[in-house]
Length: 456
Image 1 (tube, rainbow, N blue to C red):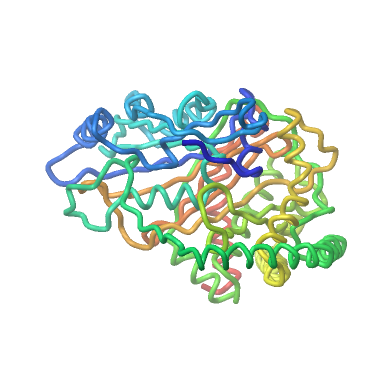
Image 2 (cartoon, rainbow, N blue to C red):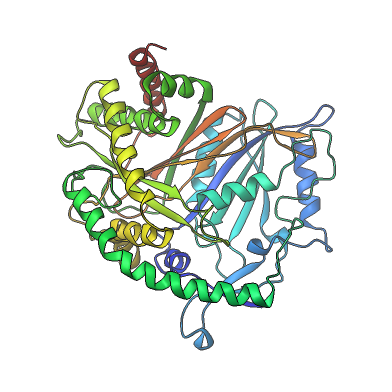
């Protein structure tokens, strides 16, 4: 079976090279159930990978291809994949520290996926001193965006700690599909045709509004004000990775006391951490850094693949006051969301593509062509599960996201929530961003500063 690939998904294949792998990932930590250890859980997973009768999840059982039959365009085809080729066992040297784990995962994250088979891998990592099993998973960005990847990870787990019949993470789950009637199908076609004319008519005012907000430096999908920084350079393939979590309640209390949102607090933590990191290196620009903040359109756009819009956010890194940074960020995000609320999903995607176009050009041409960056980094916040999750009794304790640095964007900050914790993952080009672990300490310092400013 062959499936067409959307232009946005195909862009992640066209723009990928050995120096610029374009996959997302995650590091999960599991505590084995009573009476078992990390080795037992690893054996369960490796045995499941060798099951000859298993059925893989659709997104994990197709590989990319292009040929004269597809007019040279990328498409998907069904692949009789063997999970045993995608699931690998690893072990840390003693003493098995968190830093050693992150260094191994950064090294694994540096290598591109093999395009001759489905675009995913899972590494089962034993040897942590605390007895937990680490699982590093990577999935090509052409297969899913961050929201889609997190949804797949969550769907592979159970809320029942006593459930011992949970399928392997790569196996298919039952899905309910609605088959439209002929009348409904006809209605959908007519509705789509009418909507298409409406989209074209609305695109010009959407563009005018977006560019006007950008010129005024208000919340918009486009930015003209990002300064040049040490992050906005050409990158190599080697990666650094560091991560940490904080109780979600700490961020909620700051958000409630300051009249902002948890995502605003995430951006303010990022702002303060980056300000401190750049100050220590004598590299803080006079103008504030600008973050590209992905906005999920998953609830409005059906199907797999990528469904994201973007907003450009002023991080106010020029200010030495934590409250000022938070207020500026909250105002910018509020303005931007208000602007997007008056656009259709198609218009949001179009404006977002305009804002990210310079970075897309860098990806496609394979080198940093941007003289002044359209933004300085990407900061993502992906909602996860609010309850504990298990795989055959093994409890998921930590879920650290790993993302995609690209040419001109050497640093990426992504976070996700799980069971009342917020997990931050910072992924960077190894050559361009030295001493990455210090950034995590700066996050903690900034959260404390925000708590003091908010009177928490």
